[in-house]
Image (tube, rainbow, N blue to C red; front, top):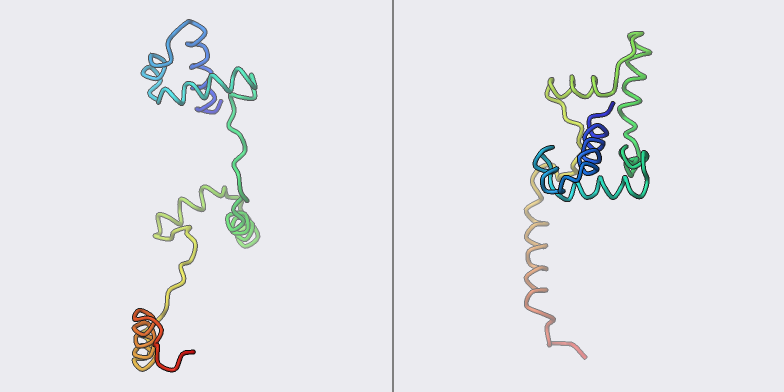
Length: 130
């Protein structure tokens, strides 16, 4: 049984024994709001309220592709969590690439941009305007 499901069912059992929410929260080691949410889920959805709801968003595709590639290349089945854990131990991170400017900007372009910014900060020139 899932640890969270067991914890929520314990909260419901203690509530049925007339324990107060603050006492339940102290006993199971969570916040009073967590106890309240578990009890509300039980009242509204019964046994379905014990389990976690599906997470929003798309599932990670890279994990599945990587595990399939390992299965094809080496002929073994591995879990996505196992791949992720081992890659983290090797120093790799599962993060989105960040786009950064490479190298130093051209000094002449930098001066032109600074001059244009300075002009914008001072405001539009009154000379020659209609």
